[in-house]
Length: 378
Image 1 (spheres, rainbow, N blue to C red):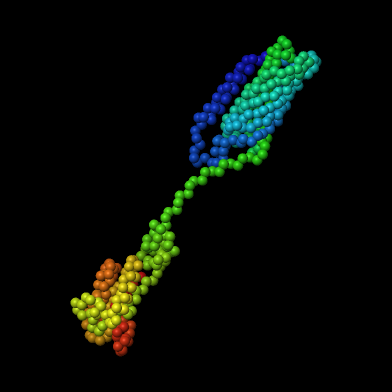
Image 2: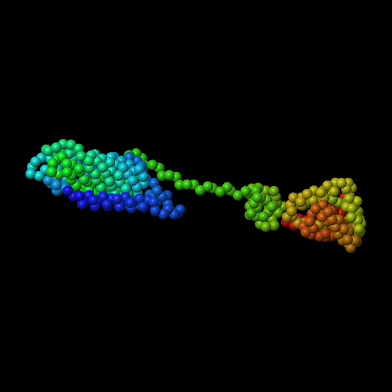
């Protein structure tokens, strides 16, 4: 009986189990940048049930008084219970020829085996194994049961998502003290090959965690092109700086029309500040037009205008120049007096009797020419 071999393999198995356990508990966490497949290989396992047909050979204990080598075959059923641990229920059989032609000696073994693996599922995985079993022996001298145990080591490799190949070797000890009365146990070395086949479809890989999408910025508080229209309402983003835009953020041509704001003949007088007294009747209509101009300028704070005054053709050129300047000045003062910043107004400028819009040969034409214009700087 090979007791030294048994003691040596016990020490080897205990050391291997300890190494596997140390690897599981001390391995550093995978970096955040590792791929999902790498995470699956190192932190999860396939828990499906499998069958494992096995064929192998014994190198028999010389105390058996039989041929030194025999073939055995068996079947295991099991599953992984953790990333690095599997359990198998198994049965195997061997038949030995007894020396000196004294018949056959067979063993049927039934037991449970635990395997402890190291490494990734995608690579060759070394493992150690330990098993306990009952051994049913049949011989010319006795038929009965005895306890048995085995320890060993092996390599496993995933072939497909539902099958593995494994090869293992070890030492099996059988406490059979009945078959040969003078012997109380046998130690045999073994080598086995198995194809592991898992049942059912593989489990779906866990979905990668989805990073929370930050809420979009509030466009109502943003104005990327600085045109005074927030990004939510701006239908023409990216307008050039200084462009006059409408409420939709698109370029807009602004016209401030003071037609209807006409002055009485020879008004305003020098020093006159009350615009209502110098306007043609009805003066209330002219004041309404001026107030609309104030409203437009307030709605478009980026608009700048030139305040220009004009006269009809009666009077000398010098007199008409001065009168046109007074008309421009009194409108200029009306605008600034109603909240329009002077920095947005050019002038006041007088053009005298130049650029008439009406016929100076008629009363109605001359009345049209006694005017002030707000010329928008686009």
